[in-house]
Length: 223
Ligand code: CDP
Ligand code: CDP
Image 1 (cartoon, rainbow, N blue to C red):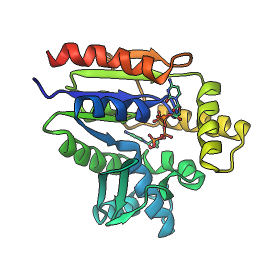
Image 2 (cartoon, rainbow, N blue to C red):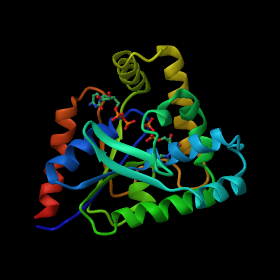
Image 3 (tube, rainbow, N blue to C red):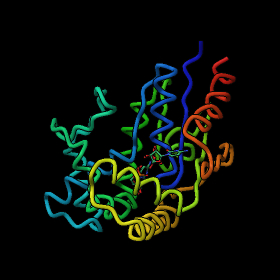
């Protein structure tokens, strides 16, 4: 059986990481959450009071930073310089600066290089914004997940409530819309569907239905 690469892109809360994790498990592939890497850098920059607009400071910081994605009992764990920051990188403070940190060319080049190293042997499901367009342009399966902003905010809201985090639906909707805009309008590797990606609108689909659609093409490509 061939070890293929699966690229899953799309805007915030479209369901990328949820379906990517399930597909990786089904195929016994590794799962790489590239957003977590940008979040980890953003978190470290905050701790060191580095301005998210300062590209040179950020690339200096990143060159001296190790980011590891390790399997845990309840999903992937994110380690920053050897420390588990899985929870810390999901705060709204990090979420609201990550698009600024990730717009810089030098930061993206270094991240893409690391991501390509993770994915070079195939047998990988990678999710993000530029996987099908830049990180894994040769991926055998490319998917672009979409959902309405209302649906995506409602999903994040439900998730926050479940975890006992403070959450306000209107605010989430504004934050998601703002991040979509920043991610889609940046100059370097913006959020964009690859020409050869399959678009799936998940607004009224269950997680299982999305997984099924992607598995169908994955199995076909694996042969
Ligand atoms: O999970 P959620 O959709 O909220 O976001 P994420 O996947 O954790 O990504 C956080 C942010 O990192 C995005 O809003 C982008 O600004 C950036 N990102 C990126 O620029 N390129 C990627 N391949 C992945 C994430
Ligand atoms: O990774 P991304 O930001 O694209 O989204 P996610 O964190 O995987 O998904 C956001 C929330 O939407 C999760 O709580 C999922 O359970 C839920 N959801 C989904 O992912 N897909 C659906 N078709 C329906 C709900």
